[in-house]
Image (cartoon, rainbow, N blue to C red; front, side, top):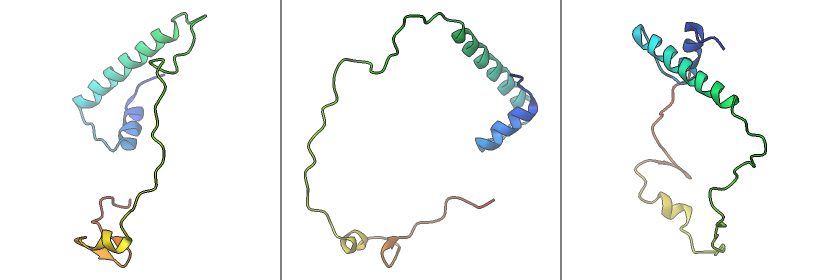
Length: 97
């Protein structure tokens, strides 16, 4: 896979990052090193190696579900700084476009 400016631009747009000048060159070098490492891993002989599913032999201990008293919607909204009938109002954090 070729690491070029077009790929860096596409990845930076997907990640919502901006790279300019020397930063782009550093990112290209890092990506090239990462791909080289993955290529080395592809060459490792894994014949007869069982996949590792869990790190330990321990089983997850889960607590039983217990029905507990919960607060009502009105109680939850009682101290809300901003509310709209049945919902909490929060400021917008994402812009369209």
